[in-house]
Image (cartoon, rainbow, N blue to C red):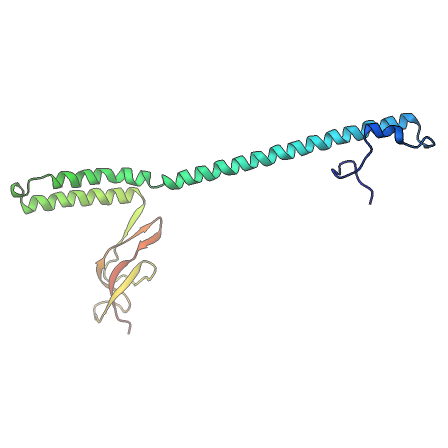
Length: 187
């Protein structure tokens, strides 16, 4: 197979080798000079293309390193907004703990706990967390509920929720924790 001018392993004569070409060559000197110029131009083009390839490869590797660093940083600080939104809830807990216990009554403590609970639920709602709290009579859904008890209940349809034992939570539609429920026995 004959080597092409763009083949980096091609063994073409250098300019100094021109004198070593046979004298009885059919090609006139002008044709040889044109061929040498064409060879030189092709070698320059090859070198330019190799240089562009090397630069493009380096740019790609640098971009990949930047993307990896950005991804690592995003993962490290992904929960920053959540933590920041929880700080007011922590502040409320700290204010409640700073109250002098003998000076407060049970009703005031319960009211404070309700305020903190509401504040906590607002933060969760703002973070797209939804409560899973099926009402009695709701058909049992294993994707969002966990049956803890099976009860015989004539009032409820078979395989439906009879009692909510613990609320569940989902994030963007994906169940984080299923609701724990008591379910009526199937017939």
